[in-house]
Image 1 (cartoon, rainbow, N blue to C red):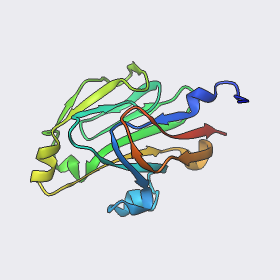
Image 2: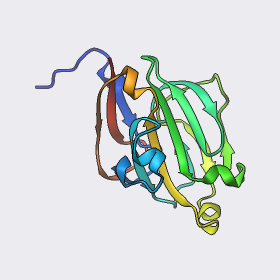
Image 3: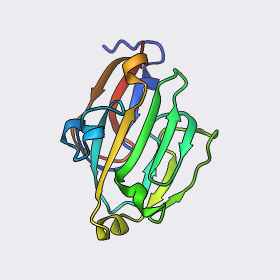
Length: 160
């Protein structure tokens, strides 16, 4: 017998890419590894799929190539950061399919990535999913580590 809290489905965080979910502490960039940008998880991506999808329903707050932000209806703010130091590529490997202020749904395509351009520039292609206001607004967080398909439930976060 399952007992569901009201709106529990909205707490889920989907995997924006397929691959392997790892702990943030294993990410090579200390800003992410030490959770300075917030609680979350990282995914070592399966680079055979060039799409990155929304991990949650919400409004787009940031729409850059290497990073996008989504504010969930409950106020939690999610940042998906594609790769480490990929900002230095000035948007070249990314095609952005979203606009700031637009409502998106979990699983909706947000950007397309040329993974080979990231590897040719000797950059780390790890994808981080962060809750940037986790210190002040988040109650509980849980991640499902290991292999994952794009769009599968990678974790959950509840607001205070």
